[in-house]
Amino acid sequence: MYSTASPQALLPHDMNRIEQVFAEILLERGLSRDCVMAEAIARRIFSCYQRGIRESGALKYMIGLDLRSAAQTDAGTPVYGSQEVSMQEIAREPDSQIGPDDLDMLQRTFDRVCIWCSIPRYGKRADRLARHITGQFRRGVSDERVLFENAMWLEQQADPRRYRADN
Image 1 (tube, rainbow, N blue to C red):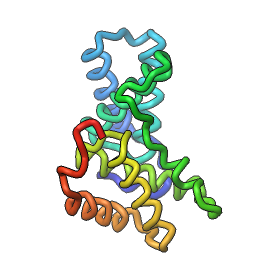
Image 2 (cartoon, helix red, strand yellow):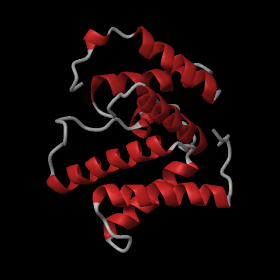
Image 3 (cartoon, helix red, strand yellow):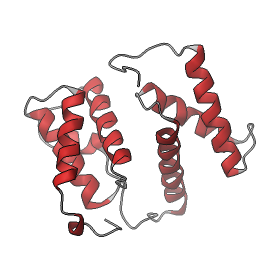
Image 4 (cartoon, helix red, strand yellow):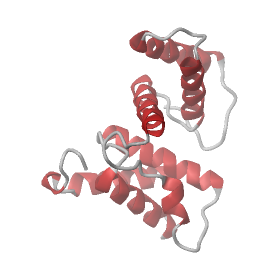
């Protein structure tokens, strides 16, 4: 996986990978390239890719989450009966503000753990994970790799019976 500590220009192989994921998502959803939904998907793929999400499966997972979120907004009711956890909201809770670069790093870490552990981005489990990552950062753990390892350890120690499938 590529290092994403600072924004980088997209190289031809990056564009090829993005194009491949984009084409696969459009094919799976039966969408044409010139529809509004395809444009939204392309923007989201670029956004996720620039945030450090490089694997095609992870990109597709993130796009799937966003499409459910868009459906949720349009319908006015939550897809799974709960609101998606937002690192921005959790990071703003105490008086100390977290800068945009650090917030991006925390979001990347949260996204990676959710993907690796198949954690839905809503409910108690995701909220606990986001609060843990943010708490670790506030206690001085600022290395993305260490935050990821700590969060993975937390998930490995969690009692699987503690969370129902819809939490």
